[in-house]
Length: 206
Image (cartoon, rainbow, N blue to C red):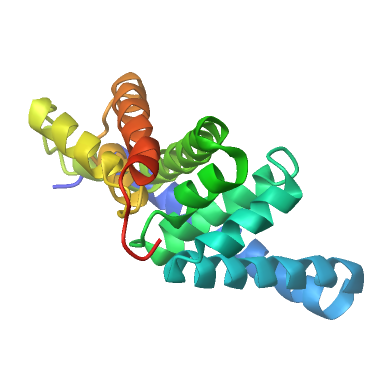
């Protein structure tokens, strides 16, 4: 039986999501039809989404590295974040082209740090969204939550595999309400491995 207090919380979250989705749709169509200057930025965003999606999927390291090298590590960081979100939210499974292209563009150390920071941002955002959307489900049905080394090991393994999306372990951690302190330790430790492996080991397709 669902806990009545938790049921109210879930309803509030649902109303918030519906409201945000409605505002997003209204804003999108308003920009397209009435705000021509902003529409050019929206077109540019759509172009970058398609650019990253196609080249990360195909493993076009040469083009990606040249793209980031031209922008530089600071000016290109927002674009890197966009690429990371596309990699983990749209593609879900792809060769680690971003990590390899960053190492090729800026060197192994700088590329490793940029890859680690970008991946960490995606993981933290995913954990936060998952906690908001899914964090109350088990407790709403009064299902006890037990954390042991097997869950931590599974999360660490999923985070560390370069070809898999970060979204999966982050959402699992939020669903099982893993404490933020444990999540951060596991996440950073595994993402260090994830950022090093593509440069140290040749991956096919990248």
